[in-house]
Length: 298
Image (cartoon, rainbow, N blue to C red; front, side):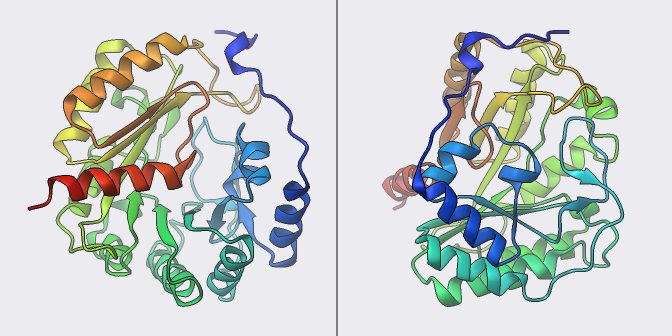
C-alpha cells in the first residue's frame, strides 16, 4: 500500500475566469458533474477549457463500488427537466463534443435508459453539430435498456470495465465482468451513428488496485474481442482512507507500455497515462477515431 504520491501525479493549480463561468452555469441549471462528484483530478483543467462531464439521474448511486467517490445513498427523484438543462448548458458552454454519464440507478424499472435517451435528444435539438458521448452503467445486462440508448444514436457509448476480473469482488461487488464485455459487444451490432459510421464503443480501466501485467494484457485482449474501439487507462487514486487503498503507483513508462500493446492489438485510440480519465480530451479522441474510421471505409 502506498500513501505518498509520486512527482508525476502532482496537479498544477490553474486560475482561469472560465472556472467561475462553468461553475455558475452548472449551479443555475441544477446540474451535477462527475468532475465534482467523483473528485476528478482534471477538473480544474477541464473547467478552465469550459468543458465538463455531466452526470444525470441525480448524485446518489445505488451501488457501492469501493473505488468510487460518488455518494452511495437513497437515490433522488428523477428530474424530468434535466435533459433540457443539460442541452442548455451545452449551448451556453459552446461544446462541440459533450460527455454525459450517470449514477447507477438499479432502483428504476428501465435503469435510467430512457432518461439517457431523452438527454441525447434534447442536446441534439439545441446543438445539432455537437457530437455526443455517453458513459453508461451496465443496466444489469438487460438488452432492451441498452437498446434504448443505442436507438437514441449517440456517437460514442462508453462503459468502463474498471479493473481486472479477479478484483471485481473487492472493487465492483455488484458488477459482473462478463456482463460488461457483453454490453460492449452489443454496441457494435447496432446501426450507424450520426456521422454515418457505426457507434464507437469505448471502455476504461484503472491501474494500481493490485492487478498484474498479465491480467491487464488479458483484459485488453478481452476488450478487443468485444470489438471495443477506444481504451482509456489511468492511475487509481483513493478518494479517502475508507475507499479501496492504492496498492501501487504505476510509473508512466508502464502506461506507455500498455498503450503500445493496445495499439498493436488494433484499437482505434488508446489514452494511457497516470492522469487519464474516461472523458479526458474526449473531443480530440473522437475526432481522431472518426478520421481513422473514414480512412478504412470503402
